[in-house]
Length: 358
Image (tube, one colour):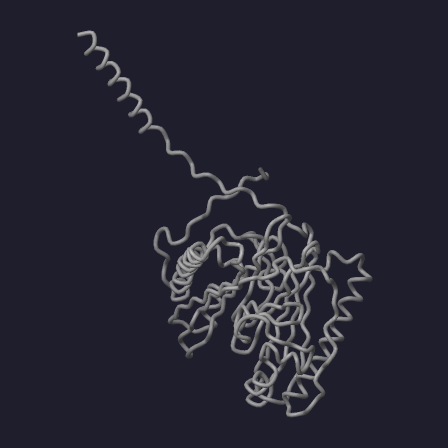
């Protein structure tokens, strides 16, 4: 009897323990580790736009000077090192510049970081804007961090030198677009550093996604195209931490993402480099493409270097995870732009990192 009694007592204890465990609150999901500090903790982003009127249509101008290595005719000698040449992810020989975004009449490029050199996040966008059926305007915009220069005098000199060089390029583009001829440039671009590239053999991949929207482009972009509208259709809690929403150099709280390029219906962002970490050149490109007077196609294109992932299986899994997440964001944008509510749970707040590194 005592043996049975002891067994029953043990069972009772086990049952009580199971009930207690069942009633205990579920453990909170582990917070993500805090990211390393920014390599440039106090960036000073400078941006400016240079323009040139052209007596030719936008189609004519872009066909003449808008290919990624057309710079070889109006700027510096150029060859394509990687990629198809005129698509996002293409790399040209000028400072290993990577095309990180494009629209019908524009492209944006970035220079890759080097080892042991603070990354200045240099980006530029070349665009042709239609003015009339027979005229257009070339616009060349720039964004970079010049906080690593010694003082204001050095910064002003650097900006003036860059403006003078690229103003000359715009004049050459105008001549070519209007049917004139110029001698091909032979001088290479100025070399600011001979340090090796941070990633000697990057493997850039793009993830293009799109969705059609039953609303005009003006309405769509007004509804979902502000820099922190992502807080409504993608990642909650977005705030502007520096700059003004919609301007080059603006930083939002999500990943410290910097707005590095824009057109009337598009913007491109990237994440700054952090101390002691690899850098995959991650960029996102959001665009509203007008289809008709009442319809629009939203494009979301991701570009990054996945060479650090261990194998093809890991690379494919990463691509599919990103595609799933951002396709859902596009569907959310479509609903909002068409005046419809988002379903419950369409936007989820990620687990925040701890407030201090660990």
